[in-house]
View 1 (cartoon, helix red, strand yellow):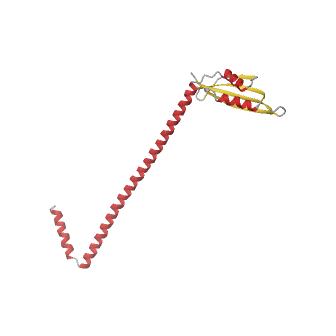
View 2: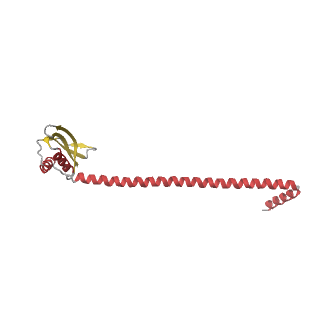
View 3: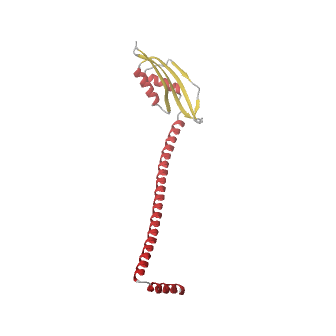
Length: 185
């Protein structure tokens, strides 16, 4: 503390020995140095605050992205569980089911060929399918039949459909494959 007082007294004595013009120059230079130091300090604080804001904004954006992904994952999981539940509860006897739906639509199925069961995906889902051939069938009856087949219980889909019109009788020949899916047990 004594050394500091001594230095301060020496600086006062030195400053008093200066001429008026020299004092003004020292005061101006001191003011400029002080202004520069204040500018550097304020600029560094502003820079630091900006970098904190940017990092905070980036983290908030990532948090929003994670929340959106979590919501879509939750929806996809619920959808998958719903389909798995449908597949687990599906025990459609395809040949009998098709015959019932054809009778309701006013059709007879002259040719029905079952195909071997096939594991699809990772092998946990089994596809059972039947190939059907209709000759001289009315388009509206065929449409009603195929629509009612897909609206039935479980997961039953029309996989393929090929039509060949017969101009003379305003009917058509149709080849279709109908499949049902269930979880492997």
